[in-house]
Image (cartoon, rainbow, N blue to C red; front, side):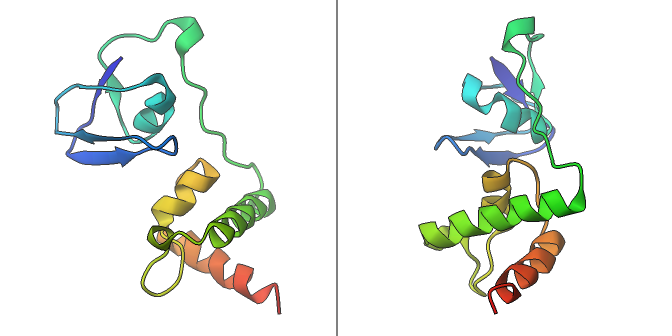
Amino acid sequence: MRFKLPRDRTIASTCGLSICFKKGEFQLVPPDMYAEVIAAGGVSEEEFPEDEAPAPVATPASAAAREEAIFAAYDRLVLRKTRGDFTAGGSPHPAALSKETGWPVDAKERDTTWTKYQSRGE
């Protein structure tokens, strides 16, 4: 299925693929990336058949559950030790964290939870 975005953007998927979108131009997107492209504001060229509609990305309902899921993502990132997952300052990139959690995590939330994550082991 083909999608377009309202601005230029490259979407790198958790499945290892990336697609470069130009504003208003349709790009072919594999089914594994439908949810990620839609979450980034992608509009499909045609309607989804009922059985192919992507599952929405669910975020935890409570703040405590969200924090625990982010901590679990930190555990995975720290164990993986991939250089591109961290900033020069040593904190996880919000994009890498968002890929691990499955929902958007901004820098402010990352900073708050990263400080708590680091201090809980002391």
